[in-house]
Length: 183
Image 1 (cartoon, rainbow, N blue to C red):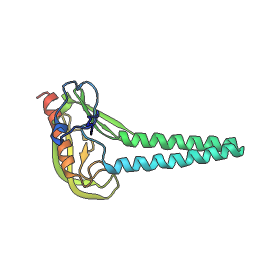
Image 2: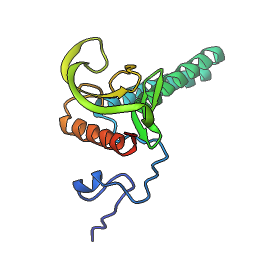
Image 3: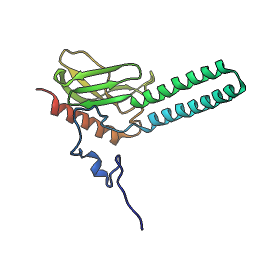
C-alpha cells in the first residue's frame, strides 16, 4: 500500500507552491524562489572539492606532516564557506524591505525608500560574467535616485533557461513591494 506524504518543502500539486502558508512570518527574511540549478551545481562542485581536500588532509595527517594537514583543513574550510555563501546569494524580502545578497556584499533597501519595483528589458550579465546579453531584469527604483544592481535577471545562476521561474519570482517580489511600499 503506497503511503503518500507531504514534506515541508514540497506540495502535492504545482498550484499550491504559489499560495502563502497561513503561518508564514512576514518579519523573517525569505527568498521568494528556489536557488537555480546552476547555483546548486556550483555549490555541489565546491563541496565535492572540499571533500577531496579533507581526504587529502587526513592522508597527510596520518603520514605525520601535521602542518600540511592543518593547511588542508583551512583550505577545505574556506571552500565550504564559499559554497555556503554561494547558496545564500540572491534576493530576499520581508516586510522591512528588499535585500540583495551578493557574494561579498549585502545591500538592504527599506520599503519606505522604494518608489517602484519593476521588470525592464536591458543588457544583463550572463551568469555574472562580464559578458552581457539582452534580457529582463527586476530593478528597484529608489526615492533618492540611487541605483543598485538589478535584483534578479533572467540570465543569472538562478534563472538561466527558466523563464517561467523568473516571471514567478519577479511577480512575487513586485507583489511584496506593492504590499509594503508606502505610496
